[in-house]
Image 1: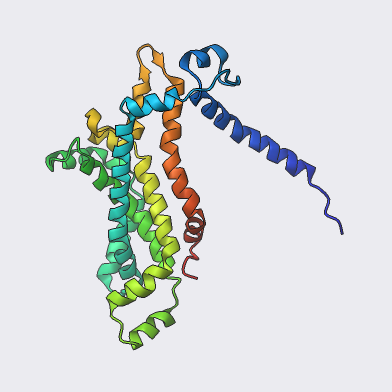
Image 2: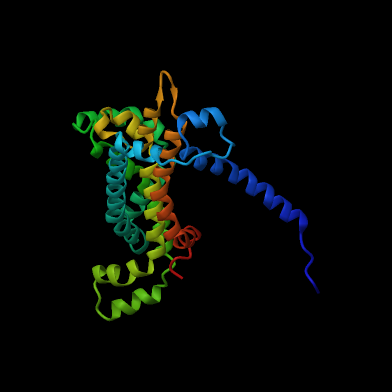
Length: 272
């Protein structure tokens, strides 16, 4: 039987494409216009002449430093998560001790506590540690709040590894360290990709911790740097949208390269 075309679904898809595509069009077109042209022609008009001045000005007037600070924070957060979460998830999956179960429950409790609820004691703690207005003071709490979800995801992936594989390596005389590096880590690549993307998003898009725990211009990150485009005389919309595009490109590339592993890891089938 011939499949009849679903015109209603096609119409709905076109409407949804328009709803999603219009804001993207407005954002991208505005970045290639001057502030005067944007104010004169409006957000929906086609640009009369294209310019890259918005991107050049953003990178030369301080936004490049914000971008570098955000990269440093993101790389450090991902490094801390990759260093601590895989051994923790492996211990949760393989250990039957009460202490390990208690630690895992504490990590799950971290899922129920929003960062907004602890931002005041976090500020005092960071200030007493001498880390206020320092990128380290942003990195540590960001990594701490990303670890519960990462531990939950990665432990779920490691549970998919069949017990027969553990038993085979144990019979061959492999130690726990060798089992972890030669069996668990290779079979958990999708889960590792998932926690890398998740922790990257948490660090790259973080706003609350940089807002409260930093003050100087030298330690600003991208989310705080967007305020520079708003002055008492108005908002530089083309410049701000160019900064938004620059800030979205790195994390978009990370997602494009790891999207398949990300989906598999969230579905809990990474070890199969």
